[in-house]
Length: 115
Image (cartoon, rainbow, N blue to C red; front, side):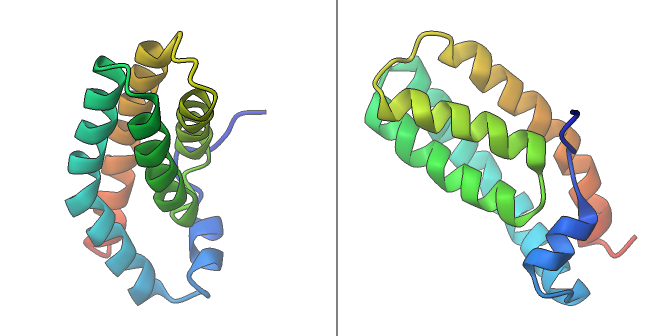
């Protein structure tokens, strides 16, 4: 089963069907995700399992709220790696997250601008 980069109906459900709130959440995520992604990348680069777990957990929650199913699963993988202190493959997983976020960003730009 292919997970969605952005599941608009799920995202709308998560914000109670409020289009304006979804737009605000999308705008906020677009502003804040780059710094969170840097935290994840740096934690992976330094093999800091605790920081990987914490930052990935935060990213996972944001992605889940937005109905970003594929990104949520990747962030969960990173969170789990950090929790178990086994970071083998975390660089590849981090790259997969970057790819998902890039795709998600273009979808969220449309939401954020009301397109």
